[in-house]
Amino acid sequence: MNVRDKPCTHDARLREVFDAPVADLYEQAGGPDAPEALTRALELRGFLALAEEQVTRVRDRVHGAMAPERDMNDLSAEDLRFDAQWLEAALSARDGYRTALENLLRTPPPPHQPVRPSRFVQHTVTTPLSSTAPTPGRTGTPRPRRG
Image 1 (cartoon, rainbow, N blue to C red):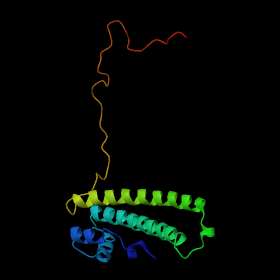
Image 2 (image 1 turned 90 degrees about the vertical axis):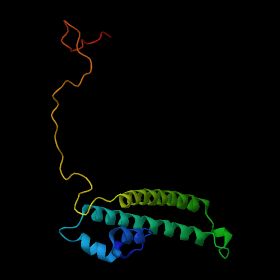
Image 3 (image 1 turned 180 degrees about the horizontal axis):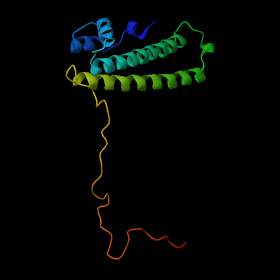
Image 4 (image 1 turned 30 degrees about the vertical axis):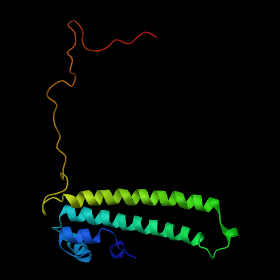
């Protein structure tokens, strides 16, 4: 299944912010004039959808292992510890993606303004980086210390 087709807890919020269903947003994002905010929001949405799917899988696996009709002799503390580690990782990823997407959707830039500068600007240092001037008679180069 394509990530576009996976449900996500933030689909309604994406629709609200960008004023279109998620399927239409993916179509818009594929165009040449797609706002960078939309592209990034959909990228985060895809990551979030996958993380939410992982949380669901682990939760369902643990529920299945702990089901009342299961034979207690089939229980494995090692398997449950492993599932707990997986769940912790999936929840951490989900929480991180949710936070990033919420932040982006809270303050989206205007439609044609990039989220960040598209190129780096190199600055030239015109003043010394040191805040203290060398003492008179010294070159400013420290002498090696004797051992």
